[in-house]
Length: 217
Figure 1 (cartoon, rainbow, N blue to C red):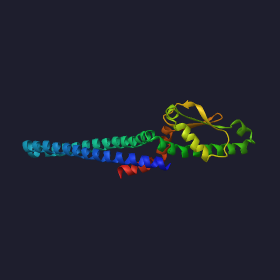
Figure 2: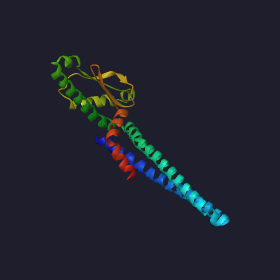
Figure 3: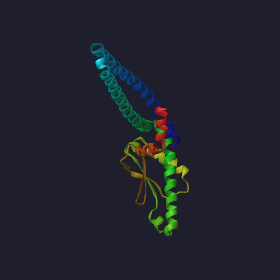
Figure 4: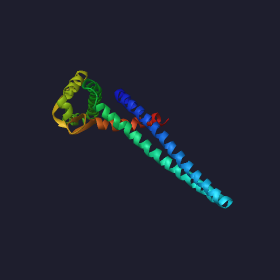
């Protein structure tokens, strides 16, 4: 996942820069709210003197509390938006890679997925005496229509096949998968979703903490 982590790192840095600009604007807004509240209370004190001093202090405190709450809520919403932006940006970045880079990114993913499925089949074979493995034979790889048309699908399949020598039943499907990019591995009745969208969702579970630290540290 090194390629994916690098992409997420770049998008995260861009999002952090945007978040920093937003914080500066938010700080200015809060300062303005506080300043207006203080000015208003000072005018009230001039008119009503000591009789309204306590009231003015309470109003200032309420204004401060309201401003602080609005600030916290705004930052929480913006943090969530920045995190979503980082990962959606990573997906867009992968899909917009030049063809050769996209192919190089996908080949290891396909090799890893096929090897993982092969290991699963071998474990099933041990548990069921080989019968289940015989029914669950072959590896059919389906790509998005976009990747098929661009020729990336065949390049990914050919590149992975060279690294998967000795594994029988590899087949490039003539059908397209309803995905944005990446691939779907079909092995018997079992399908493994490795679309770009799914990869990002999986990576989010692993990388989100690091992204948050990068954005808001």
